Length: 344
Image (cartoon, rainbow, N blue to C red):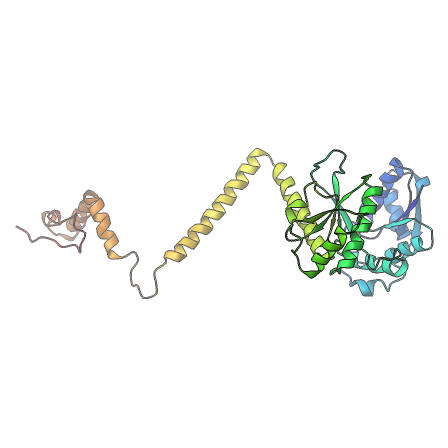
């Protein structure tokens, strides 16, 4: 079985989560795992879990690269677990290297110690994600590349990504003729600028690639293509968007009906309060007005409910010693300024 070097110190939850995962692999498969990192810390984690010692070896590396470190400076630390693991592959001690650590440092380290395939100009990061299946036998996971290794690409590099992605899908996904799509802002051949138009033209002319044309954002989660090609900046944004939407949907579908109802009411109340506040600001009087609401509003209310206003006026008259009869002779239905009739 192949030997896989694993960066035990890379990632937000390293080394515990990484070592525990390798321990599970050692029990379920015959894969040989080479844990690279601080030997003492790795041993401490292994002592607390079940594992098969015949499938796990440790390669000591005294340093670790943090997630926030600047990649070009980080790769200068030759004794870090990431650099030691990459060199293990380059020297033939392992067939592959796995790391959940600093992505930029990982790409630079691999570019320094690994040789690119003949004819390939730039490396690509590839990621798989779940999607709908439109045909029988399709892999439930689509392949997206590049997702961050090459931020901006030329047309030739996008063609290379399509070739590598197609080879990956044939070997790993077991698809005889994987459909390859070019992520773009429209399905027309002329969309997306010079680079994407030229890449589209070249892919159309490649007989070894089953090119299905341009894909829009909503095609990412459908089964139209098995391999989606794009430059690193766009691919990274698309991947993070898919992750974010899936997390929101998972959260919503796993809440109890009562929790969902309460959350909906809170959201509605917040929206209503915000709308009311906005409406109040829109209706607020200008600085030149001395009174709000205008006096005519009180007169209108007097016309709509004359009985209530008559009783109020009578009460005020009694408290001030005035004549209630005089108040009763007021014209309650007048829409103009209030005027009292003279006493008879």
